[in-house]
Image (tube, rainbow, N blue to C red):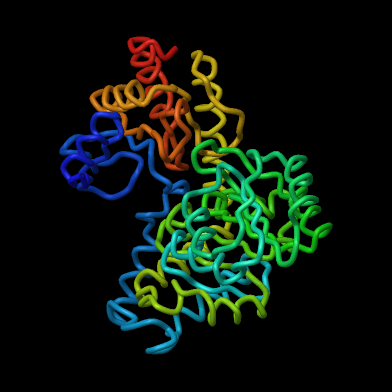
Length: 390
């Protein structure tokens, strides 16, 4: 007998995995109004606090007034607008690549790029903790999937020795979104050269944050010129929306002709393009340097404070700071109790993370104050002790 939609929802609820949204009625700042209450926001990817920056807001408004509210169609139908070209040129300069191509989101980028690069008969080597959009892109490609243990380049080398035949792609997150650790990109580059593979890095959580000028994990690790596809997003540290692929001119041409999420989607609108352009420019200024310094200081304080309080914090150095809880039910109790205490932090459960590794995922912002975070650590510790998490 076929299961009803109602029974499927009930099954999700019974397993403690039912998801719902919360109403935000304010800007995405360090403090937000959530369900009518003022709370400290500790689960936003707005790492540099640019989502309500005056320069981005002004650029967005001016573009809407000059160009209107929509691009009208896909770029292959109604043309490339001037702002598309300017933003792609700015991204290419920022990432020190020959070219760049815009996509409507990180998910659209990964599900478009990967099937454009590989297909049936090819092999893709993917980190076991890669983002769901990477996995979906691989499944759409029809290529053979070989998964390697998280960040284990020695096992990857053994797997490539055995399975690297024909066209091969290595794909990895730059910063892993649920753990906050960084991929061993120098080793991936070495294996790419040894086996003649392409290398793609999803740097959604590194762009704007890591590296001397915020160019991301590849800049931080000194391998920017060695990565064939650097995918990044504008909707996290850059405070806007959309995504890009920084690539060679040749790969850009291939993506224009093969990436279905580019070909068959109405392109990003002028107001979003202008805000993204302002953000790319801003992160390369002294103000961008200062914001990264503030974010780094906030991250170090928060990580150390939670670890000293006895919580299980995975090794890492980025602005993504998880507390490992284990039980999905306890994780959600923790999240609800913190919201009642004025802290908005999301519980992360399967299938986003493996069973038994449910966690609270905190994300730091440059615009959090020291007093904000010190008070948050006290409240988190109080709730954690009450729930037996620490």
